[in-house]
Length: 308
Image (cartoon, rainbow, N blue to C red; front, side, top):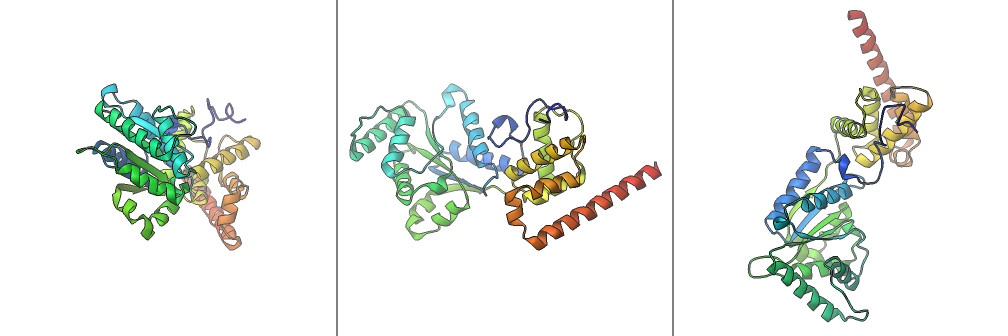
């Protein structure tokens, strides 16, 4: 509803992961570097974790796009499982389908495991690595995590037949600390945890998305509004999207070309996750702090005008 008002060509703050909006933030670039180095070195297990909304799925899709953009001679065969709530048999079937195996309806577990191994060997003989990428890995049942470990044991004399990349929430780390998963834990050669964004990084991130969406003028947010969004989102990109979107809606509703701290605070009050995170005393403190910042910013602007 506000595209024309703010000079945009498309919505800048959608929640669907879109690799065209990928921003080269230090944390996300470091995670991609870890992934590329680990996969190039042939490591069996790689793990990327992050809090809900920190961009794991977008990072996952960016990795898939990067791998697909490689020259044909270097391109790996990728198997992608976005919904891993699967028992061991279902997990093997999902991998088999991703690798192009045609299965019988009543195929036994032993035969399925053997056919998978032969398929992986055949792909390896043609010089192509196989990468299994699992999003939301914290949802894998315990037995399926153990199945992944057994799959990672498949190897030739020199190379792993299957490399496995796990994207998951912090709960995955806590589960892997269990004694029963010590063998799997020891096989994870590379791991990275996505950090939250600092206020400066959140500002750069929102500015990047606005630019990709077609904004060629100055950002339609005041400095205080941007700080409020960074503070209320707790550095989580997805929450930053929600708050920035609602802030622009509030500004559009008032006919403003630039959103201020009042619109940002209204967006925060309208967002359930923010309301639940900040208890009542802190919400008043937050409102008071933003008011003080707004007064300070206004005073600085007036002083600047008088000096000019």
